[in-house]
Image 1 (cartoon, helix red, strand yellow):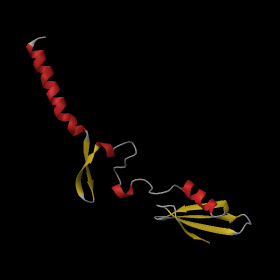
Image 2 (image 1 turned 120 degrees about the vertical axis):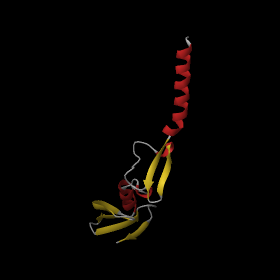
Image 3 (image 1 turned 90 degrees about the vertical axis):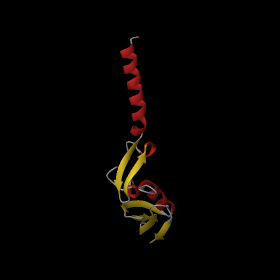
Image 4 (image 1 turned 180 degrees about the horizontal axis):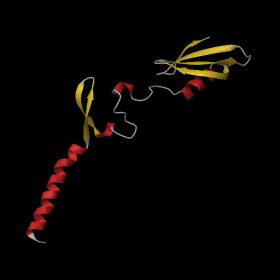
Length: 114
């Protein structure tokens, strides 16, 4: 191998080694200013356009909320409303009487049954 080729390969390896750590993280502008984001927080579902506390729906899904409402005696589901911290499920019990179940969206605890 010639000297210029070995020098070029060594230079390329050195430059690649120097840039690898920079590729494993990114910068994020948020409410706390400029922050370095580690590679493990990035991914296909990572929403850069929203602040960290608003990425994705927190807590339980609407399907899980419906299961909780059914365990409270609801047999027919009419509507599911997701608000900030609660999920309200409207429907009817086994006798056909109207029923509303309000569930905490984060924990899944039943707040009220009407």
